[in-house]
Every structure is written in structure tokens, then in C-alpha cells.
Amino acid sequence: MTTAMEQLAHRQATKAAISEVAAALQSVLGQQITAVIAGIKDAKAVGQWARGEREPHPAAARRLRSAFQVAQLLLQVDDPGVVRAWFVGMNPLLEDESPALALTHEPAKVMDAARAFAYSG
Image (tube, rainbow, N blue to C red):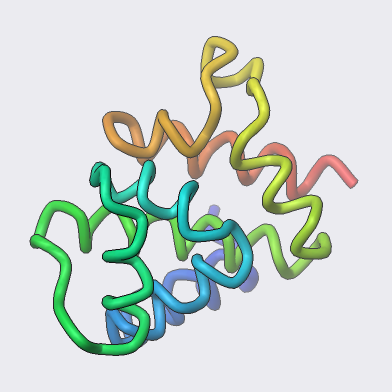
């Protein structure tokens, strides 16, 4: 069953311009972590995306939107510092991989882990 919080996060991730998505992730996670999620080496590209100076490759854009949706869900229950720590920490529901890295190959599992974290209180 999808909750209102999940529906809101999905709607935000779907409707936001990719520049807004990049800017929000850069604000919460920083350029370096956002670059890791996008699968790029040049973290400065994140700032260029956020400013609308260029567009990410479609695969990178999909990963950014997935991360943004997860972040929006978590930001409804925790502050940005906790959300950032969640993205970079080892996660037992992801076989001790960080969500930032797992997003590149298992976005649905990352969302499941985010749900478990958000609803655990």
C-alpha cells in the first residue's frame, strides 16, 4: 500500500525540472555524493545541472530522480543531516552497501530501505 508521503515524494520527483532535482540533491547531499549517484566523475557537472547550464545524460537523470524521490520521502520525517547520513551509511537492508551506491543498480531496493527507515519512527 502506498502512503500519502510516498505519493507526494513521487509527484515531486516526477514534476520537478531536472535542474530542480539536481539543485535539491546538491543542497542535501552535496556535489560529490550527488555525482556518485549520477554515475559521473566530475562533481562540478552537478552544479551545472542545478543551474540549468547543461542536462545530465538520460541514465544519470533517472538515477537523480530516483534519489530525489527517496530524499523527499525521508525529508518528510527527518532533517537534511540525517538524510545525508542515511544516503552514505552502510545499510543492512542493502547488504551493507550505502544507498548512494545502491541507487545505481537497485533503486527499488533503496526505496524499500527508505520506507523501512521512514516508518520505523
